[in-house]
Length: 338
Image (cartoon, rainbow, N blue to C red; front, side, top):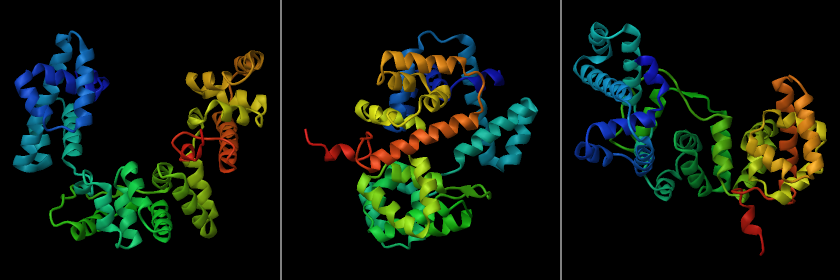
């Protein structure tokens, strides 16, 4: 039963649970969810069809065990809950349930800012020290962090991104101190382990969603102090599969600068959508030749494929910076004149 349960997507479990408990109870539960969650669950419910009795039993048993574990934890803590569960369940299953419950009761740092409007957060934190702002933005969704970043002064933008990129692990006590300074009513930090937030990936994710002028200004300023850091960020900001965001004319410009052997190697692990995009922008004969090269290429090193893909990404970045191609969602569309 545990194995079947682990193989079932969580969203499907939620949908089956809502159907199983009846409309009246399900209505009250759904009313406490976010709009996006309601839409996702409703979509799966609509696609469920007939529910197999075995699947329903799995979901209801798991829900019951999770509910009991939560009750036990509230009564006597984690060890108390695990002891009681192990008396009625397999020890491995008891451990998995405890792990799931502890993950759900842990609260996200700066959770009180998750539903706050970006403009209000900006007003709230713009006078804080760059390190404090960096810590906050690293714990918010990239979309919200990007909106806040745009509103900061350019000097502070550079300082904040630099600190986010250099951030790796932050002691929960530090996070708690910052939270306490921003709001009186804060979440308790359950875990005493270190929370991973920030880093180059976080900085790249935030900049990737910023408008083109903001991104360019920050990276140019950063490059003076740390060109290696800028290169790391740039490599994470645009990956091979993002070539799908380049329009057909841009793809054709890129293909003019790519050797066919390099292209065949890069497409070795490319998605079907990527292959269709590339082949659709070259002659039928050229597409056939590259397909044949890929077919007869045989096993290749993943590192060689990634290197070939990176070379293509570098070409795309260079052409975009030169204004020769447009990438959807990167701010260039606003400069077009129709």
